[in-house]
Image (tube, rainbow, N blue to C red; front, side, top):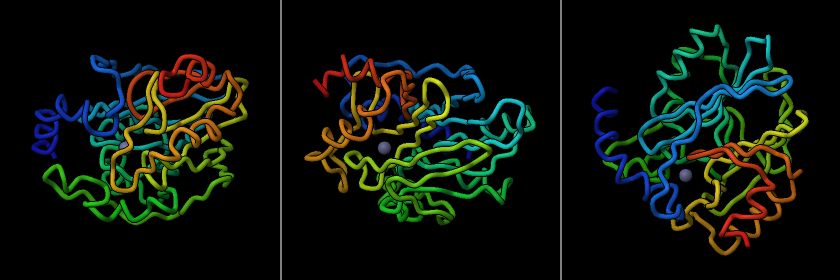
Length: 252
Ligand SMILES: [Zn+2]
């Protein structure tokens, strides 16, 4: 694992601009904030995996130990250390889409937390077990994870760690990409993977990307949410529906 990490670190500056974020404006280098974010009843901890600057998240109800994970990246030790330190119990691993930088930590977490179920959109499920489809084969190694436990469809409602989530299918970057919306908090929280970033959108030139529908899907599935909704992307800064509706250069 150490060797793999060093390998990625040596390449990550190059791939940072090429992998999931081909549409980032040149010069964009923010890795996003990784401090705990406190909402009225929920706490969210962004966790950075340095290869590809990918952001995963740990989410739990305040004063509760059950939690779920969004997109555990290529440095799962960061998640495992947090569970240990805070006494958290991960009950689910939610995947926005099956690209290697978003699923790289699943296997290591599942080794220690055998009952944490894996959730992924039905059209991205095969990426978990196919290194070509999850793009890791292109990078010189073969990444696979256990098979999914739960396949998700648009509109699915989940109840995990005492938190209600709605699943929205947003193809464009990846065929089976889903986002996870927590509507209960006053402001709403949305985990979007590589669908949309601050002033950018996910690249759309992968074999199962769908550039023709990408913008319309973002408009109908993301920009229709309440304006105060906080967006946590898979790379870079958090943002809001309001900010992206008004200023995202790809959506004007
Ligand atoms: Zn991606």
